[in-house]
Length: 146
Image 1 (cartoon, helix red, strand yellow):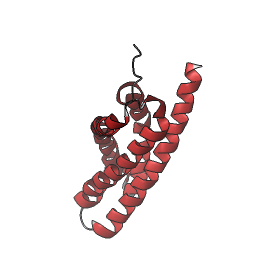
Image 2: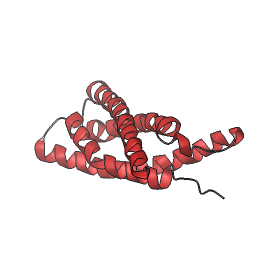
Image 3: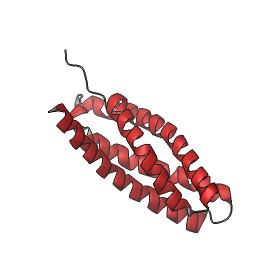
């Protein structure tokens, strides 16, 4: 039963990740093609950082209210405080994973010359399982009863 729940949670997480990836890719495309059009740093560093933060906020909200909703306990007065703390933890964990993702993205870009959006999608695939594991075990951990 526990394995089935974990697999269903992972499927929901993947759905959430797809939504986040769409947000990330759309914002990255807009920024890299229309805002930061000149120079490597704007296109390959600044644009992905901004698009990542947009996707992170969307992913957190979906994760909190959908993927790990059964672990979102607390009185109504403490919900905002708990969400803020969880968001900060989630942001820190995802930001560390993002650094790994950026390393992968820039390596693929440097060695292949592929478009930043393709490099980003490949890097997202590599970092997804690590993100789920950290979120499941640490960020949205099960509350102990008693």
